Length: 296
Image (cartoon, rainbow, N blue to C red; front, side, top):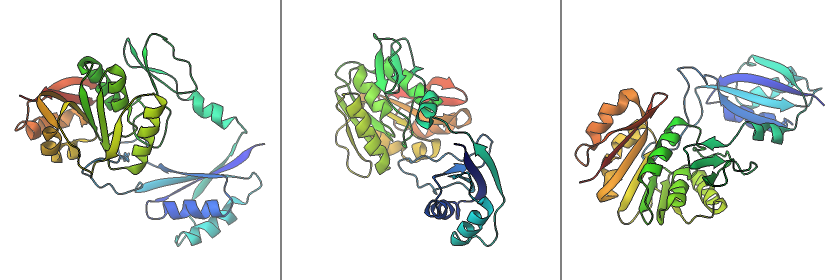
């Protein structure tokens, strides 16, 4: 049976209320997207230590899946009023064919080869190389599935840097992928911190699915001790603000890797960390950079 999909462009002040009203009115599913996705105005939504981000996108798109015989205009008129919109917003509608949505979603996520010996594999796939180190990771709400260039850069650095018995702190752990990779590569003390409670739930579940021991906690709580390795894959501004705190977790002789940094932001990050340790470019990918250095 085909379904009816409607797409409404609105702002971040009304998007969530409109989505709730559509669900209450019988919509089968509703999502909120960045209407500027794929353009220079795209607004990433990450939860990062030390930063407070405004939820939602200034230009939002609300997409609702409806029963095929729904009067979309009438439904939207009612829901828009409930959401506090003074006027009926413009909307587009299309017919969506019946599909196996689970299979379709899963087909969009294939195993990712990070290196000769490191793979990221969704749970519904067989590992392509049975001899490889496999990270089992399904797409979820927390950032970090291995497909983003910054995650790949950090994974490549970890593979070069982790030795058996090392300790590591993943600062801004998201899904926990970097901490889990470090554990699979031989690190024995693995700690991840994040300000997002959903990220911590996701990280703990992922660690359990990969049969690794790691401790994940809110970054507002004290993290004790110093680590052989510290990795932080967030964004340039919080990395700059948090330079003293992040550097303090690194033991003398320990190594630090930072990512989430654009090429044009490299010099300001190197300068921010210069009082604590020297940093240099350890890798680049698609305009993103990984900086790394050793604390003297």
